[in-house]
View 1 (cartoon, rainbow, N blue to C red):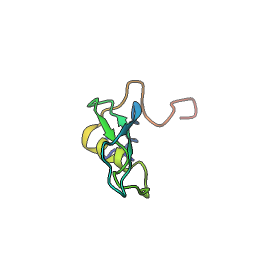
View 2 (view 1 turned 90 degrees about the horizontal axis):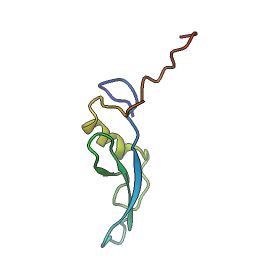
View 3 (view 1 turned 180 degrees about the horizontal axis):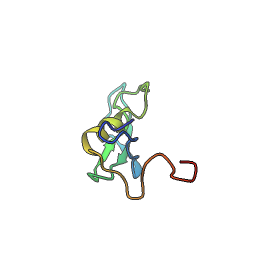
View 4 (view 1 turned 30 degrees about the vertical axis):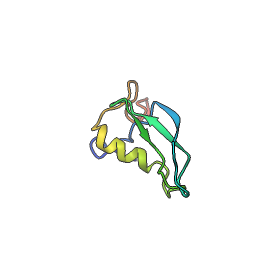
Length: 87
């Protein structure tokens, strides 16, 4: 996803973990993958509860990033272009 604020791709998660759900329904996932946000430091679900594959897997992360990041990037992350002799 592209940030409308900066025009750059959203920063990726800093870590992933698997969370076991206590009482999943018949057509629900027993485990959920979660990603850690660099800005708010919260674990964000990057999968839906329903046991189906979304058309775009990253949509859950992009929705969180659009609401949370507001132009914030990970330290060391910069523009997508490499500034060299040709540039």
